[in-house]
Structures are given as structure tokens and as C-alpha cells.
Length: 247
Ligand SMILES: NC(=O)c1ccc[n+]([C@@H]2O[C@H](COP(=O)([O-])OP(=O)(O)OC[C@H]3O[C@@H](n4cnc5c(N)ncnc54)[C@H](O)[C@@H]3O)[C@@H](O)[C@H]2O)c1
Image (tube, rainbow, N blue to C red; front, top):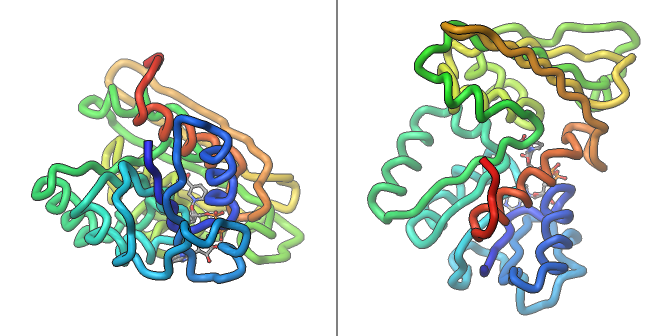
């Protein structure tokens, strides 16, 4: 399977290594606004504009919310798109535009579970959900802060959270898309110096019961980003490629 990568920072760098180590995958291009990040890649794979994108089976975005909007049309008019910066879809206009592009061109948008789990049950119970809430804690470093005591940074809807914390709460978007939507999903964001890494507590109530899920992970090289998100993205690439899947 031929793959292109937009953003080769923490997650993109990990994915590039995994793709290059897998003989059934081919890394056809990398695109990053930071020239330092693409230095180690073969010259012929580095592009500086999406207009120069070669034909691929899948483009993976691991860059920023802004990048999703910037590249969606160029990518989805040609091929499938897997995005990590899911919070971009909190902009209703962009979500609608992407849905339109997929319909028009017969392409697909893929969203990995990322730094959260439990998406299977959330999605299965979508029509029966009564409430969905997430409490997300990170070490202050993850917010570029140095709080010495527990500080609640945000309480509100997932839509507002994704806009206010574009690099920190993509899981709220993933949960919203698979659950009761951006406006009804409640989010609390806490800066906690006692938290070594990132901790996400998901609580959902449905007609027949409830689910509570406590996910803890060390951050990656990027203190905003859970180490598990990159693994989840590679797992989804392999699922898209096909083979044996357990659902
Ligand atoms: N879905 C999830 O659960 C989840 C979890 C963690 C991180 N993320 C998101 O994934 C994205 C990547 O995270 P990361 O830790 O690898 O970030 P990072 O900062 O380590 O790397 C991002 C790279 O993308 C490049 N970039 C930024 N904007 C660009 C643009 N418009 N065009 C091309 N390149 C651009 C940067 O130069 C950088 O090299 C972030 O948006 C992050 O919020 C999602």
C-alpha cells in the first residue's frame, strides 16, 4: 500500500519508521512545513506542496488542526485521508465540507481511536446514549504551564474544548463523532502536577448500563501527545490495508 505523510514530528516520525520497516507498505511522500523534520528522508520523497503529491492509496495527517482544513480538498479529491488532528472537525463547516468531498469523489476519511479506547462500545450504543463525559488530565508541561497545584483549565462542550485546546483534546472529537456529538459531549481539562503523563477518564451512560474507562499513558516526545496515539494510527493503517482483523 502506498502512503503519504503530512507532518513528520512525533507521531509522523514514528509512523514513517513503522512504514519503512514494513515491506508491504511504501512511504511515497512526506510533507512538513519545518524543513528540519524532512532532512533524514530520501530527497525524492520530500514534497513542499500538496500539489506535488504523487498517487497514493492513503494520506496520513499528523500535523495540526489547521493542516486538516488546508489539505482536505487536495487529498480527498484523489484518495483516502487518515487524520490525527480530529479536533479540526469541531468546525462544522469543515466536517460538512469533508463529508461532501468524500461523497463527490468516493473517497474516505479515517479517524483512529488515538489516545482513547472504548470507541467500539460508544459507537455500538450511539442510539441509546444518555450522556458522555471526558475528564482529561495532563502534567502541566502538556499545556505549556508550570502549575504546582491542580488547576481546572476548562469545563464545557467538546466543540468548545477542541477550539480552545487544539493540540490537546483530539480524543474529545473522536468521542463526539462516535457518540452524541460535539455539543452534547461534556469535557473537563485538568492540569495536574501529580500526573506523570496523560490520563483520560471516559464515562458514558446508555439505556442499559454505563461504561467507565480510565486510560493512562506516558506522553511521547511531545508532552501534549500520548504515546499510544501513534500506535493506534499505525494499527488503523494496517486495518485499512486488510488482513486479519478482530472486531
Ligand atoms: N487523535 C488523537 O488521539 C491524537 C493524539 C495525540 C496527538 N494528536 C494530534 O496529532 C497531531 C500530531 O501530533 P505530534 O505530537 O506528532 O505533533 P508534533 O508537533 O510533534 O509534529 C507535528 C509536525 O507537523 C508539522 N506541521 C504542522 N502544521 C503543518 C502543516 N500545516 N503542513 C505541514 N506540516 C505541518 C510540524 O512542523 C511538525 O513537524 C497534532 O495535531 C496532535 O494534536 C492526536
